[in-house]
Image (cartoon, rainbow, N blue to C red; front, side):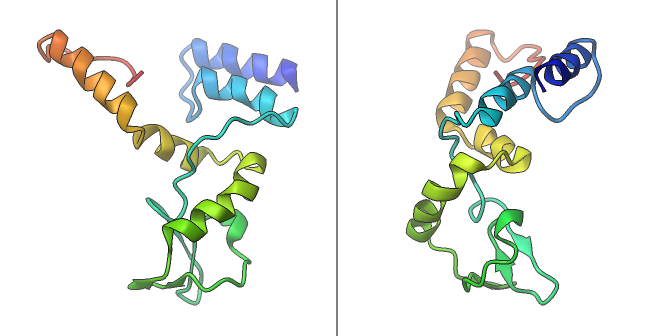
Amino acid sequence: MDELIDWLIGRNRAGYKMVNSVQRLNDMRDFMRGAVSPWSCRAGHNNVIIRMDGTLAPCFPMFSATYDWGVVGSHKFETRQLREMKNSCEPHCFSTLNHNLAYCYDVTRVIRWVGKQALRGFQGATGSFE
């Protein structure tokens, strides 16, 4: 797996378009070895899964859960319940979607980025939001 991840990182650095960053690809190594840092999953907060019958789930791994999270137009997501659930599932999950959402909703990162742009006079911001 390490060789495959190195190959993917090489392709990423060569300019191939990928959803995962080099850092996230490197994180896969830790994930495969059971070492996952908390990453503030956004399931149930900024995205949901809509099942065929209109009922909701916070994410694909919870698609078959029998918990009642409501229906389209009337969700029943509760922050406390989601937080408790994620204590057990987040260490075993590598959701690219929810990880990217966590990255985007990281307020401290956004403030640092805006501050950096302000120091530059908001002129020609390019590259990633790191």
